[in-house]
Length: 137
Image 1 (cartoon, rainbow, N blue to C red):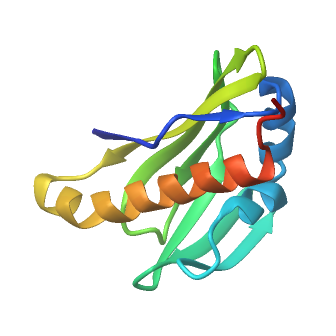
Image 2 (tube, rainbow, N blue to C red):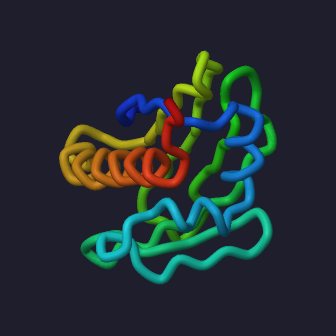
């Protein structure tokens, strides 16, 4: 497994409220960037979308969240690369600190291909969270 970690962002929302927000997958979809993510669809505990290059990502919620993990999802077929997506948060004075993490089952060659796409996706999710849940200082 290879771990990919997105940037840590400070948000103006408590971890509990952020967890409620993004566990509604419609809200998660609104954090994804228009243009580099297309065709976002959700159905209860599942969602799917296409990333740049036309690769379809299909994710299903994993209810085994623990500790600071407020959302965990795993890819399902027909996604070509097996990976998990976790949103991890901790409480701060002004709200929460949050980042996105993934464990991917990839070989070195596949890693070279998927790393830029996953890092870009995590950067965009982080930027989307900062825009939607800004700090109120």
